Amino acid sequence: MSGEQIRNDIRKLRFEHNEMTQQELAEKIGVTRQTINAIEQGKYSPSLEAAFRIAAAFSVPLERVFQYHP
Amino acid sequence: MSFREKSAWISLLAYLGIYGFYFANVGSALMRGDADGLQFLGLFGQSVVLFVLVIIIGTVIVAVLAPKEANAPQDEREKLITLKANSASGYVLATGVVLTIGVIFYGAKDFLVINLLFLSLVLSEVYKNLNQIVLYRRGA
Image 1 (cartoon, rainbow over the protein chains, first blue to last red):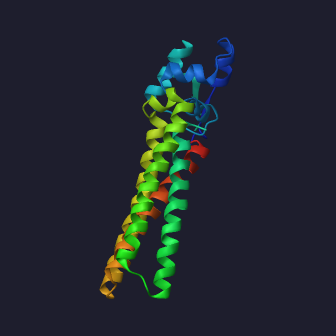
Image 2 (image 1 turned 45 degrees about the vertical axis):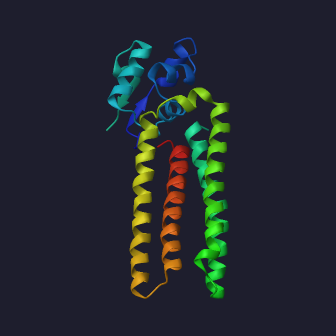
Image 3 (image 1 turned 120 degrees about the vertical axis):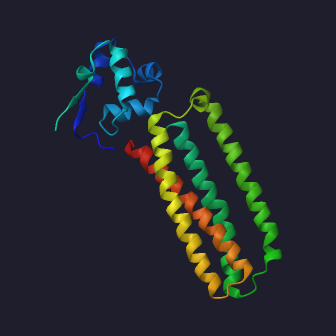
């Protein structure tokens, strides 16, 4: 799954939320730390459900986390 | 490295090491022309038992080191990796079976047929493990 067109600000959002670790975010979302790392690096595009969960974990709208660049 | 990637490595190394040894023996016996099914039954049984033991012990060790991860169900990326790897390995198994059927028409003996089928299974599993490892390394 290519993540080239979908960029994200997860790393920045983690930093803004008390320097939340990938492991802490992974536990909130219900995925592994490696999956958060893959999403963060744009190597894996998450499902819509996981994307909404990530946004909810930061209490921000979805487009604040993910941006689509066609 | 995640628990499931480690499990894939254990499986890959066990397949290559244990069944590699088995097929090296079978191959050299076939080359010499003195391949006998009964002669290899013992080696086959020992290989299967050793393989199961290595997988169980290896997985238990990895699970003890990361119990939380080991007990967690696969997440969506891991499920995708499993599906992709299974799909790819299916083609290897199917190719092996079709080639073996072709060999049967040329009058291959039971010993060769059984081992070609078993080799197809082992190669498909090796290919699956390799795919899993590559996909885990790449992200998905």
